[in-house]
Length: 250
Image 1: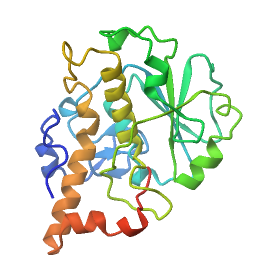
Image 2: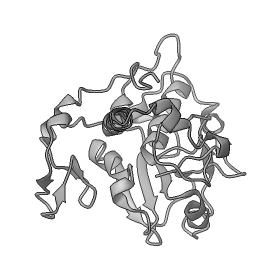
Image 3: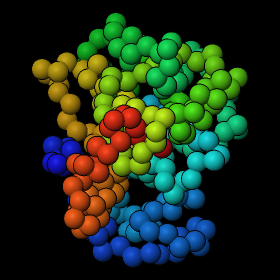
Image 4: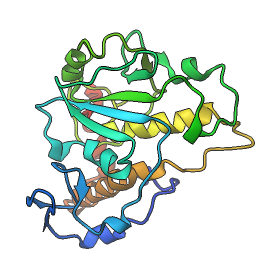
């Protein structure tokens, strides 16, 4: 199975291979790579890429979600100025004229619906859309269905992404293979937004958001190596639930 990230412009993460468990300087807990309590790296932070995203992203996580398995802390670490984490049911009140809910519900419209009339070559750092915030749900599929009914979210316009197959390695029988992890969802939103607001001939996508998958791609490679050291095929490992089309959203 080939590396699904080989064509992306992701910074070198090889230094993480030598990482040992360290105590988080904020909370004092022993962590490996990053602290999912404080949303900070526990390695040399100067080696961690920092990104500028086109929108503010509010991540709403279910309280029963184990953050050690969640990809949400990765988003907050890599794009700290745009990504904020909230725990359900404590959800801010949002302006429905300026906020989109990213959720593949029946009433969800593709991203192109909100940008179809926009001129090309809009600077993504200074977009002229009326929207300035995107709400992302970090929960299992069943948990997410209850979160989106919250009064702070149920009046928001709902947007969905084009279908992308997840590369996440944690499986859940309730979810299809197109059910993305949180960091994947934010990444694909940013990429699709760029492609919709730029002329593909004059300004093709330049990989500016690929580093959102900095940790994700590293952990993916770690899992590949772990499975292969046990004499198993990673492709078979990733496909072992395909009969039920099952992956987990985190």
